[in-house]
Structures are given as C-alpha cells and as structure tokens.
Image (cartoon, rainbow, N blue to C red; front, side):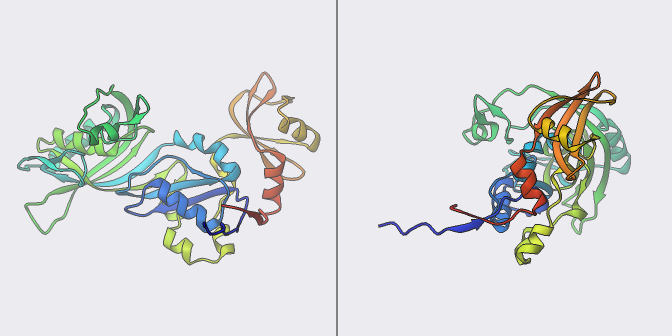
Length: 323
C-alpha cells in the first residue's frame, strides 16, 4: 500500500531570481532546486546554460514566466577558456580528442584573430546543442553517431578580447575569451573557430556567463547561499517581475483605464507610437503587463491577471497545496 502523499505549503511566488548556476547542474536542475527552496508553484528560466557552464541564470516565478521570452533575445557576455592544440568530438572538455596539433601562437596572432571575429560573423551550430531537428535535440543525434546538416547563421560579436592564459606547463597553452554577443551565439563554436583561425585547433575548457541583458554576476545568488537562508531571506532575493521589461517605454493608467486594460481593451491617450511598452496602474501602483502603441492607442500584449496582481501586492501569502 502506498504511503499517503505529504501535503506541503506552496506559495504563489512572483518575480525574478538571479541565480549563479553552479558547475555540473543543468539549467532545469538548478531551476527545480530553486523552485523547491522557494516552495513556488510555477517557474521557468530565460535560456539554458550547459551543465559545464556557470554564471547568470535568471529564473522566473509565477507572473514573471509570462515575460521570460523577452529576455531570451538579450545580449550576453561570457568569459571562457579555450585549450589550444586539442580538438574534441564535442568541442569541449567532455569529448574525445580527435586532433592534437602543435601550438605556435603569438600576441600578433591573437590580435589578428580578435579583429577577425569581432562584428557580424557566421556560425554553424554544433551537433552537441539543444537545437531541434524533427522534434529531437541535435545532441541526441550526435550521441547516436548521426551527423545532421545545419544551416549557417549570422550572429553578432559586439566585443571580443583574447589573451593567453599563464600556465605552469608550456605543453598546455590556453587563451581566455571575453565575448559580448547577440542571442544564438555558441561560445563553444566560437572557441573552435578561433582555434582553427590560429592554425592549431582548440576546445572549450571552461565557460561562465557574466552578464545577460542588464543582469550581472555580481547581482546573483548561489544555490548554496539560498539554501542557507531563512524563508524570508530567500523571498527577499526576488526582483519584481517588471525588471524583465526595464528597457520598455512606460505608461501609467488610472484606476478605471487600468481595469479596462486588464480586461484586454485598448485605451486611447496622448502617447507616441512605441513597439514595447510596460504598463502600470496608478492606484494601486502595480505592474499590469506589456503593450504597444499605434496611433495613440495602447494595445494590450501580455497581461497579469487580477489575482496575480493582488498576490504581489499582498507579498505572496502562503497557500496549502499538494506537490
């Protein structure tokens, strides 16, 4: 006979947690751990980090999950280390070595390649990635030994810095890569392509995301630190949902217009056209959702519902739920 399921308290948590994802966990594993620690009902993340990567992983809870897609398009900054001379099957340290070449790289070479890979470049997505083909991730095909043709894609490398890493062994040479990039850029592929341009090949040996959108690693909390906190301290780590729309134009509506807007009705006002608008209520002061403005009309986009707004205003009271 199965034991009865234990009832636990869940809370309707709303907001954004800036997590410093640890090494070895997938983004979803880190999300589920944070969700459990906060006893949240609903959660999602804003784009994955590989298990071998660490760094900034914004986690969205409750109402914030409605706006997580907006952050997928954000520019990101990474710090990485690429081991020179060795190519691997996966492009990182987990793969088998498939080429071992001598390394003859000078500062002049690094400056040349740095300039070559700054700006708009073309990448071929790696087989060991989460891109889908016929409903399956490419890495599933790769593990089965199947190579899938991938279309090249253009990405933007806004800024790139390459420098050689000091090593105690002349036989092991590596470079540090600091790259600010557009969405869809594969740092693993960038490291491999830089290695080819240097004439020796390379693979990614370490990767850390230090910024995404307006969020930086210095703002993040680790899972270990979160676990050591009290419940109130954990909840205090949450940023309000509207941080996800910080770059939007802002419109504030009075009580009557706010109620109609939340029901999906357009509002008219003396507003300039704008593609991305964050809408707030005046009384009570609360984030209502997103919109766009055309010809003085405020057209609703993604909206919070009245229950979510009330829960946020009441600081998310605990409720009883079965996991």
